[in-house]
Length: 200
Length: 387
Image 1 (tube, rainbow over the protein chains, first blue to last red):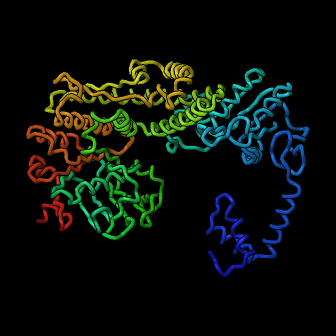
Image 2: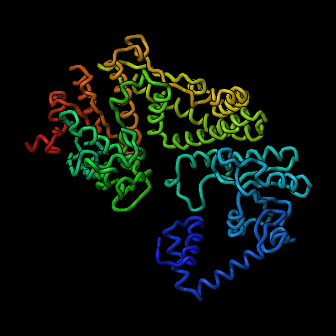
Image 3: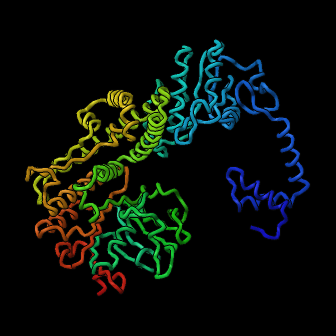
C-alpha cells in the first residue's frame, strides 16, 4: 500500500477496490488515473455519482433502475404490455434493450435461486411476478435466464409457480449463435441445438 | 509413425528435473532406472499436456522443483512438439509463471490459450500403480476411473457431471435444512432441482452405457490374446436402464420420480441414496469365471491393462480427435514373459505412441528396435543410441 498517500487518497483507493472486477492494485491505478485528470474525469464522475445517488431508484413495477418510478420502459405506452420478459438482473434488461428487438416489458428477479448461497424464492421478486401475471394483462411470460444450473432451476421453479395462471411460459432458445460456426461449438451446445431444432 | 505423437519433450524445474529434454522422433519410449530416478515424473509431465491435474492428480503448485529448505515449488514448465497426422508439428506447453501458483498457463504456438485446447493436440491415457487397488477400493474410485474413460470419448460428460453435482448439492442443502429445522422444504424448488438432476443424470447414465458397450465390443472383437478377457458391467440402476436401451426421456422421468419420492429419506440420511452418482463398474474375469476383485493382483493388473488398451484402440478410431498417447507406469513388472511380449506386439499393432517405465532394462527386451530406450539416472536422460 502506498504509505505516503494521505487518508483521502487511501479512502478513495479502498472504495474503488471494492468495485466488481477491481482489486487493490487496479484500485490504485484507477485512483491515480482519476487524480491525474481531476477536472476532466474526477469532478464529472463525482457529480455523476452524486446525481445517481440522488435520483436513481428501483422501479416498483419491474425492479429495473431508472430516475422515474415507474421506469421509462414500464411507463412507455407504446410497448406491448402483454409480453413480459423475466431476467436475472438489470444488466440483462440493458442487454435486451441494446438488441432493440424486444418491445414488451420486463421483470427483474434480482438474482437466481441458490440454496448454497442462501437465496430462496422469498429473496427474489417472484411473488411480485406472480402478482403481475395474475392480474390478467399478460399473454406470455418469456424467461430470459442464464443457461446454468441455477438459471434453469429458477426458470423451472417460475414456470411451476405460474402454471396456475394458465399464461403460456416460454424460454429463450439455446443453440447455435448467430454467425456461429459449428466447428467451434462445444458438444453440450450442439446437443442442445439438435434437441431444439425446428422446421427449416 | 503414429499419427499423433510427441516429437520432443522439454521439462524445466519440474519435480526432480532442473532441465531435461527428450527427442523421441515420434517413436514409443521405454524409460528404465532405479526407484526414485524420476521415471514417473516424466510420465506425469506428459499427462499434464491434457486438461486436468495429471496422472498423480495433485495440485499444480506441488509439481514445481523444490530444493531442500524451499517452502514452495518453483515456477515449472513442460513443453512438447506434437505431430498430428500430416500436419506440421505444433508447439504446446504448460506451466506456472510464479512458484507456488496453483493456476497454470497453457501455450499453443506461442499464444496463451484455455487448458481445454490441449485436448485438440494430445490425448494421454494412463495406467499407474495407484490404479492397482481399483477393484478393492470404494465404488467412487472405480466410477472416477470409468468416467475418465467416458470423458476421453465424450468431452460433454464432464460438464454434465458438474451440472449434476451442483444441482445435487443444492437439493441436499434444502433437504438437510428441512430435516434439521423441521420446516418442510419448498416442494416446487426441489422439483425444479430434481428436473436438472434427472436431465443431467440421464445424460450421464447414457454416456456411461455407450462407453461400456463400445469398450466391450473392442475387447470382444480382438479375440485371442494372452490378456484376460473382461466382461464389463455397470451396476447402477440408471446405467442398467440405459444399457437395456431405455430412451432418454424414460430414464429422465423415472429418475425424477425416484428423487421426488426419496426426499425424506435423503434428508434424513444427509446424502442422496439414488442416482448415477451411486453407479459402479463391475469387471468379471471370463476365463477364471469370477469377479476381478477375487483374482490375483497380476490378473487384476492384466484386466485393467486390457481395458486401457481397448480404450486406446477405441479412441484411435475417432477421426475427429488426436490419437491417444499411452502412458504405462510400472506395468511391465507385473506381467509374465508371454504377456510382456504380447504387450509389445499390441503396442506396435495399435500404431500409437507409448511411454513405459520399469526399473530394469530387460523388462523391455521385446520392445528393443521398436521403441526408444532411455536410461533415467543421476545423469538425467540418456538415450541408448547415444551410449
